[in-house]
Image (cartoon, rainbow, N blue to C red; front, side, top):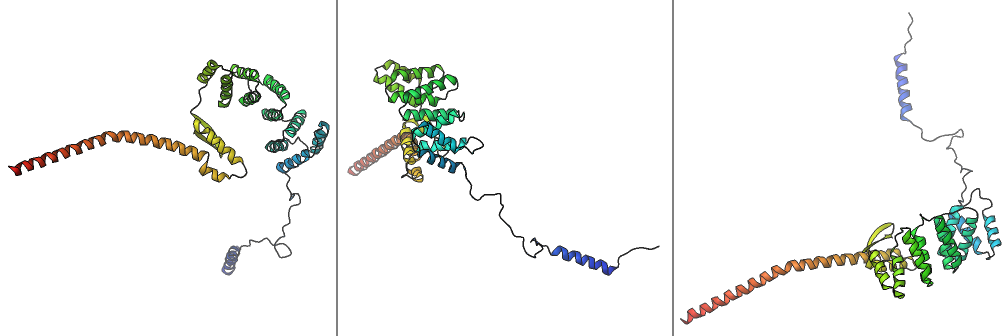
Length: 323
């Protein structure tokens, strides 16, 4: 019979070739031209990225150059979004935020009304932005119309910030009857007033001589001993008497000439925590002083007794010497 077998020399050569091929590994892809493959930038990726921030900046620059004519403003805004597939809601919201920081109240009213006319952005935030801009622009009648509309449509789910805004509007302009009406609606709906609302209503009660109502109000809504504020993304617990100091430091930190790092050591939370630590240390010192009173009295009495014993011994020694 015939048998097919490999010779030992060929077998060793095969093993050697296998070993050589395992030891030498190629890590570079070589093309036909004997070199590394050239890499080209992808064509469909643009180098210049236009995001919502740059769009909102262009939006603000576009609207600032316009006049106050309604047709001109609405036409320019329509042409700005003419090539957009969807309404650029995020861009408009960022532009409104920029205009609010620059205190351009008329432009905020124009942009918000244009956005609402398009059926976009009908949220509580948009309505509050419009209400705030109308109040700052002294358009009280339009603000009252907007308030009546929002109040009637969202009777059971109206945020407290709207009541706060309307009460502050009437308080700053001396419209006490309307302010009391808003406060009565607030109590009827079961919305708990904050410290600012209680202080404004209580101040009006004191000015008008309604001391009995002021006492009832202060009993029903007593001032809190602690308040919470947000500082650098963290919720901070502060005593109510230190809130004025904290708010003043927060306002200073928002100014351009004050650095935020300096505030951490000298103002707001730093001073509030120092005051709290001083109060706690003062209480501890007082307790320690009270605890140390009795031992100190005992020690003083024992010293007096020792001194009397020494005097008696000296007197007895003198008597013995004389005898």
